[in-house]
Length: 258
Image (spheres, rainbow, N blue to C red):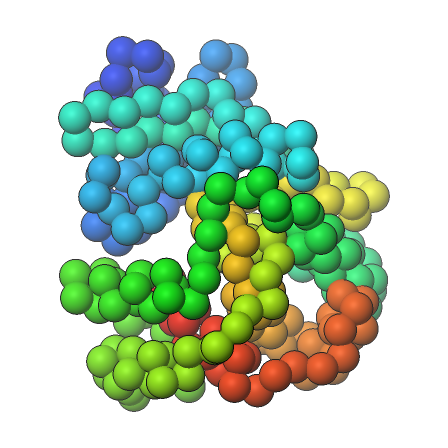
């Protein structure tokens, strides 16, 4: 049974009941509830959290009107934490759409391409290789990496050795686009009737970055569900047929630190 909480929240936010959906690393929590008579999600993080929700709030504000994302209902800070309330979206995870695999992959690729094709000139957020390496280094130093989420290919390796390889593989350039930064299919919601993009969610890493930041994640996701043939189909629908092995390896490694 779901845990129900009467949370002590800042006065700007209504108090419980809230249903706990997820309790993450270092005090991050996600709840489902009702705010101003709207079904919503409440995310709470400490200020010092490596993925503090203020980053998502700022990106949601910037993305509004550019691409479908959840509506912001409230953002509040107190001395210890940040609180983000967003409206629920009428959508389903991309891979849950009721269609043939190739059609699902096409819709997923179409949504990702739509994001990647957004103009980047006025985007205030960047996620270049040096910033990504610094994020990985800080995550290791502060013991904020998650062994449970590691891909099987990296389970037997130390985080330090993975970090060393990441630094060694640092790309000298970047194919910059607007990336999601956590582009797994469950962060791409489709309209359950039409299959069109309903919203991108969990957008705290959206930034101008190398497109491989997303493609390396998408590879793992698609292959897990649909095999290597699914990945080839994704590339076809996305509009790319070649993958640079060293750049791809860098981002596969980097994504283990998120």
